[in-house]
Amino acid sequence: MDPRPDGTTSAPASLLLRVSGPDRPGITADLMTVLDRAGAEVQDVEQVLVRGHLTLAVALAAPADGGTALRAVLDDLARSRDVHIELVPAPAPRSAHATTDAVTVLGHELETPLSPAEIGAVAGGINAAGGNIDRIVRLARYPVYAYEFRVTGADPTALAKHLGEAAATHRLDVALQPEGLERRAKRLVVLDVDSTLIQDEVIELLAEEAGCVEEVRAVTERAMAGELDFTTALRERVRRLEGLDAEAIERARARMRLTPGARTFVRTLKRLGYTVGIVSGGFTQFTDGLAAELGLDHAHANVLEVAGGVLTGEVLGDVVDRAAKARLLRSFAELEGVPLSQTVAVGDGANDLDMLAAAGLGIAFNAKPLVQEAADTTVNVPYLDAILFVLGVTRDEVERADTAEG
Image (spheres, rainbow, N blue to C red):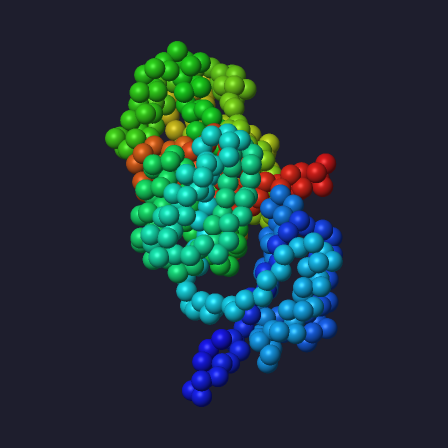
């Protein structure tokens, strides 16, 4: 109670009612019936269920008697429902202008729970940045454990720094995004293909057919690490394929492997109403089939020239390089009427850097160090559908959608 000038006390502005105990059907309904009969004014309510244990919090406008009469009826409810109920003065609400962030945390070990030390490191980083954790929700247990922290009041620069340190120390992927409509409204996802949507580099599949894979692979590594101009490197590698029978393309395509989780990732995005596209420094002879197989909305790649049933060693038209990927992302967004702030780009190599920077959210997927440093966030597990958790989609939502369609 707050003292008045005359020495008496006044009731607090609001009370916090907390209910905890084993969950049973009807507890919340019964509580609201009691509050309604008591004439209580509900200001806020939040409920969490963890392994069958209920925690329910309700902020109430304090009655004139400070809650004395209300406590009596709540005691009766607690006894009848075998739960613990307390009624205490509520802390002052936070400023409506406090920043709110979503911190998504993914473990690297498949189907292994995050340890207390790992969760504590993230929580400690949030605290060090002056933030408060309003809520923690588990998003997934498969293929990796993923949690989302709702954070208010943190300094953005300090939060990014401390979370980055926690991620590096404990081998976690930590995504930091402003919470709000923009995060929930992302509507276009554009992916790189080689080593992102698929596990392979298609030019290396072709080089295996041509017997020059080691030479081509060496050039590929230098290009993806940013050591070589991509266009020059691509043309040099393609020239080594001159004379290869066009039927080798079909053989290489048959050996192409989707990244684990790719079908689930695209299927779930499409169900949620997303537009999905691919841009590739590879070749249309591969991406056209991927687009048809996965039901993609957009696909753009280089075109291998074929004449007389063999590869000429040349690429037709402009090469899809680093700058072109960013242009294509903007073009897809314009065609779909989606602002860039509502786009997501996913890639692994230096050729993806401009595209990742242009998107509202740039995600480095099992990427080179240079790309991980530049991207908004990283995902370093071998399952593409883990990116869904960064977007706030839960594993339960994915599985329910799959069940409903099946």
